[in-house]
Image (cartoon, rainbow, N blue to C red; front, top):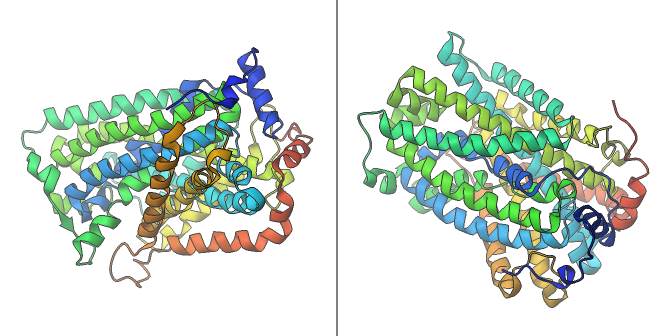
Amino acid sequence: MSASSPTSASRPPRSTAQYDEELLRRIGVQPVLARRMSGFGNFAISFSIISILSGCMTLFGNGMGTGGPAVMIWGWVGVGALVLLVGLGLAEVTSAYPTAGALFFMAERLGGTRGRAWGWVTGWLNLLGLLGAIAGIDYGAAQFTGALIAMRSTFIPDEYSTLGIYAAILLLHALLNLFGVRVLDLFNRVSVVWHLAGVALIVAVLVAVPTQHQSVSFVLTHYVNTTGFHSAVYVSAIGLLLAGYTFSGYDASAHLSEETEHAAVAAPKGIIRAIWTSWIAGAVLIAGMLYAIRDYDVEAAAAVAPAQIFTDALGPNWAQALLAVVIVAQLCCGLAATGSASRMVFAFSRSGAMPGSGLWRRTNRHKVPVNAVWLAIGVAFALALPSLWNPTAYNAVVAINVIGITPAYAIPIWLRVRAGSKFVPGEWSLGRWGRPIGITAVIWVVAETVLFCLPQTRPVWSWTHFNYAPVALLAVLLLAAALWPRWGRRAGDSATAALEADKFSDIPVI
C-alpha cells in the first residue's frame, strides 16, 4: 500500500486543521462539525461498533444451531479475511473523500453521469444498515441485561419487559450522544480497552476455572444443525451470519471523518485496524467459549446461550461477573452505532436527500446533529417492535443490518474499480492492488447479501420463522424510488447542498 498520491504530493505546508478544512471544501463540503477526534478515537469507534463482545455473543446461540463449532470458528476466519478486503477497498475511497456522508458521497462523486442516482441508492441502503445496527446491538444488550437480572432475582423478563429495557438503553445512548464528539471519543477509547481486556478475562477464566473442557477436535470440527434444513452446505452458508453481522459498522470511521484530525489518513487506517484487531480477538473469544461448553443442547436452546455457558462452566458468581463485562461492551457498541447513524442522517439531510432535511441537519451548541440522533433511535425502536410477536425477529433485525450496510460498502468500491485511472486517490492508497482487491470485495458482498436474504429456519413460511429482512430491504428500495422524484433529483450536487445547508447548521436545538 502506498501513502503517496497526487493529493498528498500537493498537500500545503499548513496546520493539520487547515488542511482538513481545505480538503473538505475542495471536494465540495462546507466544514460544520467540530474536529476533535484523534486517529485512535477514529479507530476506536469502528472497533466499538464491530464489537466482538456484542456481535459474537448475541448470535452465539444462533451459531450453535446453524453449523455449530466448525462453522462458527472457520466461518469467522474465512469471513474475516474477506471483510478485510472490503475494508481495504473502502479505506482507499474514504481517504479520497473523508466526509460524514461517506458511502453515499463517494458513490455520487464516482458515479459519473449517474452519480446522483448511485449516491441516492447507496445512501438509503447505508441508512437502513446503520439503523438496523443500532436495533441489533441495543436489543441484544437488552436481552443480556434481562438475563443478568434473572440471575440476580426472581424476575424473568418477557418480550415486553425486554422491549422496555431496550427503550431505556436507546434513551441512554441518545442522551450521551448529545454532549459532543469528545464524550463519544472518550467512551470509544474506554471501549477498546474494555473489549480487549474483557476478551482476555473471559477466555482466561473459561480455560483456567472449569475442570472439564471440550477437545480441540470438538472446537474445530463438530457440526450441529437444528435449522430443519438437510443440506450441510446451505446450513453452513447461513451460519456465516454470526461473522457477517459482527464484521459490520466499520464505516463509522468514514462517517466520523469530518470530526477527525488528518482524516485522509486516520479514517482509512481506523477502518483497517478495527477489522484486523477484531478478527484476531474474535477468533480467540469464539474458541474459548466453545472450549468451555458443558451441555450443548441445553446451552444452545437457552434464551441467552453465553449466559448459560458461563453458568454451567463457572457457577453463578463468575457467570454474573462475565455477563456484566459483556453488557458494558455492548452498551459502548450501541453508543458508537448511534453516533455513526446520526452522522449519516445529518450528512444525507445536508445534501437535501431526506424529507424534512432542514430539521435533521441542524446541530446544537456542541456541534451535534441532535434531531438526527433522535430520529435514529426512534427508527431503531420501531425495527424491534416485531419481537413482541415473532420470537425469531431478532435474527431478522441482524440480517437487516448486514443486507443494508454491506451492499452500501460495495457500491463505492465497485465505482472506484470502474473508474480505473480516472480515480484520484487520497493520501492512503492501495496502488496497483486497488482493482483486484476491489473486485474480490464486491463479489463477496454480493454473495453475502444473497445468503442473508435466504430463510434461516424451517418451516420457511411460518410466521414465527419467516425472515422478513428481504422485505425490509425491498421496502427501503421502494421508499427510495418513491422519494426520488421529489428529493433525489434535487439532492446533488453535494457541494451546493452542503453550502446551502451550512446556513442552518448552527441554529441551536434544545
